[in-house]
Image 1: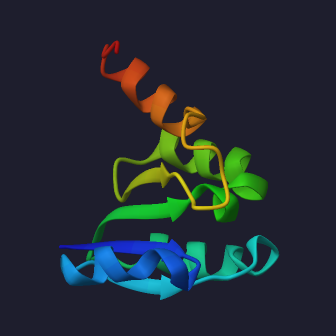
Image 2 (image 1 turned 30 degrees about the vertical axis):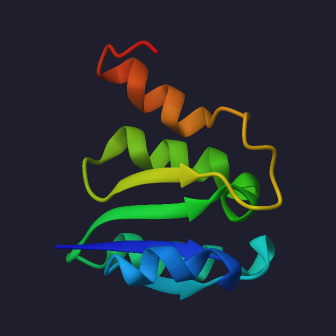
Image 3 (image 1 turned 180 degrees about the vertical axis):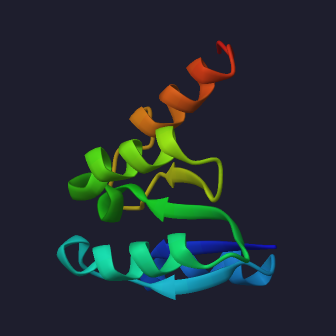
Length: 101
C-alpha cells in the first residue's frame, strides 16, 4: 500500500523524503485524469491532494469518498492557500468518525 501526493512540485520535497509517491500537478484544470488514475490504482491507500488542486473537483471527490473506503482522500493545505482554512473533506471525514477538535 502506498501514499500518493498530487500537488505542485513546490510541495514534493518533504513528502518525497518520507517515501510518499509524488505526482506533479501544477494546474487544477488538468488534475482530473491524474486523480481518476490514482483512485483506480489498487495499491494507493491514501491520496493526498493539495487544496488548490482539489478545489474545482471537491464535489466529485466528496461523492467518491462517501461511496468507497479506499483510497482515503485527504486535502492538504497548499502554499498558495491560507493555512487556517479548514478542509471541507477533512471536516466531513472527522464528522463521519465522530471526531471534534
